[in-house]
Length: 135
Image (tube, rainbow, N blue to C red; front, top):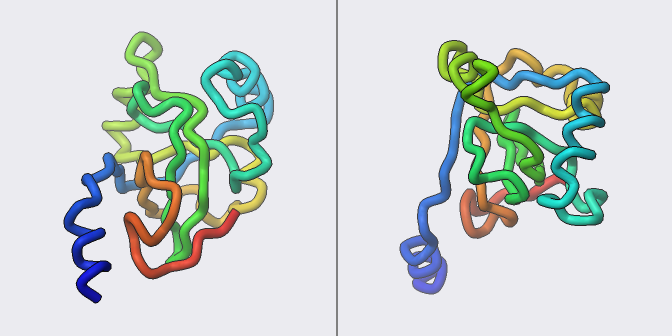
């Protein structure tokens, strides 16, 4: 118990966003994964899916998506850009993340629902103990 408390106190806070979950269509998902491939791990099969967040420093980071009481291991593959209005849109509509097409196909009921994304967190014990993480 003391070790768990120490781990909790010593674990730095991870950036997180709460709000609505949105989704990319298939073509933008494919194009963005290709465009940002150099910033991503070569094997994405270890992840439940990819997401875009309103934090461009997070591209390539692992993240946990919390939705409906479950946690999903994601890779941040894109961010909302200021030039195209994406960042403002995410702020205006309180969007925590956008699921890429593959993840959206696995979680269709999540679109438009509330969720939370914890960036830089890749295992539940460090950030949201104790819950299982789904891949």
